[in-house]
Image (tube, rainbow, N blue to C red; front, top):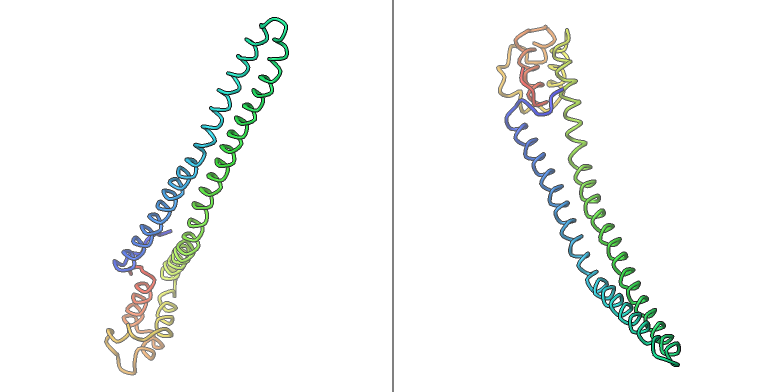
Length: 201
């Protein structure tokens, strides 16, 4: 199985197409990672809210513990401070929730920005490459089989005629020479067939 053509022009086109496909996939991954990092930065307010909420809650809990030691009214002072501490905990929870949401969005955007372009590139690039690999293998196998050169020559005669102008025209024409089994004409036509497939004789 041959991955690249043997003829220079077609091989150059194939290598260029492969490089473009790889470059587009790398660019998609890089863009996705940049977008992921940018979206993750939107979670900074959530981190600050979580930190502030935890600090507020801890401070109010400590204040409530200290207030509970005041004789006679300590229990009454502690209750509102505990309630305020729960509000601080709620702020911290909201900050964590914001961070989680932003993290999920960043991950989903990153996956979408990788998967969609990669699928498009693969759909545009891979089928023609696989078709060429399969066709070149079949053409090579045909050329190596007994009578395969005749079939290749016939395919060339039945196809576009522009490449036939370079061949010397025997008496009666190329088709007549092919019918007679002229080995040189068949070999020349088969070589054109191989060249059209990107292969050398």
